[in-house]
Length: 125
Image 1: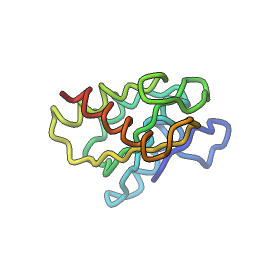
Image 2 (image 1 turned 135 degrees about the vertical axis):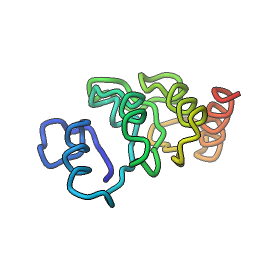
Image 3 (image 1 turned 45 degrees about the vertical axis):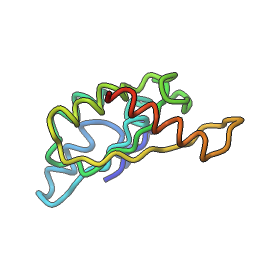
Image 4 (image 1 turned 60 degrees about the horizontal axis):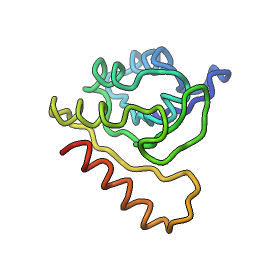
């Protein structure tokens, strides 16, 4: 299951409760948690990962503002990227992290992706 942040659509995975309802249906179900969408929907990815780490296979790392706000360059939004990455590292959770670039920039996509990767390396140093 992959989440978005449309809280008005009851058929979307957009809240912890919507994920938990689906996870209760089968022990085989797993989560792809987009931490940017989760924050844009005013949810706490650190708390969700702490509680459900054994059911999360990967995260999509992006920075967004709360209240359905826009995507932002890493470190300029409300997504607790540092805390999420350190939680996964420090607890040795088997969760892969994928960078998502979905905001405009005057730099090339390759340069922006390099900057995102460097941000992640820096917060984990």
